[in-house]
Length: 356
Image 1 (cartoon, rainbow, N blue to C red):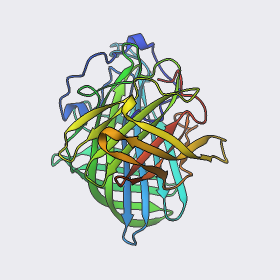
Image 2 (image 1 turned 180 degrees about the vertical axis):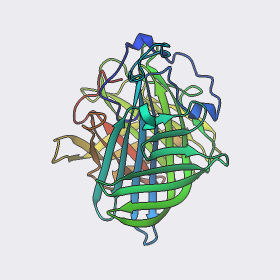
Image 3 (image 1 turned 120 degrees about the vertical axis):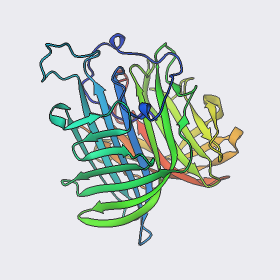
Image 4 (image 1 turned 90 degrees about the vertical axis):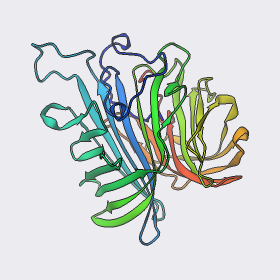
């Protein structure tokens, strides 16, 4: 969904960038690439993996593009002028061991340190990357020596690409342009290697991949959001986003998407989704207090259950790249239907108002 981080530096007035006001005319593989007419963009993977010993691991890799200067470069523009920058977050949740590790970085594109193709999925940040091959395999690679984590994962799509909202237009606020283009592969299957503290593990499992881009998304008064990407045991998937005000209330433009077993979709309105926190976890590092268990009801989809964090401490403090603090980790659903996936929680350790 709307990923939890963007670069601290936001360049250019919103009016200088393109805004999403109508459903985009999407064409693939071109629209898997970068959209430099929009200010903010990200490519985002979360995966639930098992190693050969049956141990559970959660993985998150996100690469962000932040526009700094709109429009094309002038012929006499200095080569060193910063028109865009890239940042990334890598996280591994060792669910059974109860450990969470994460890494971050930020680079400018000069010198080939970071970049993204405009006509296909090929985005990189040093040796962190997402690529899609001609045979439609999605590969995610990243390595961080300081944290001791690395991934090299290859996935195939088990279901068609999902266009969220109105043919890919995901509204996030009441004003014109408070929207993003948002597409996902909600059920990827694959395998590869996961390295933790120098120990390489063979892993396999399922993943969710988001791509989102826009220039002016959040409406006035929104301080953060709760996002869920769940794969259900009956072969459906559920995406939920609740955009929160400071008093905890949820704005009208919140909602979600139900993906049926055959790949067809149905947009969900705010009033169809009942998500209520039942238990909380407080970070000993930042003081941020996050929900870690919820009741989740979507009566129109026959969903009534309890959602729980698989590992309560999945907080990322990204002062070295995006300057925000958020929670991102694997969750499990029990009740009328079983499921699992990832949750993203922002605005619980400082408001994100004004950043989008």
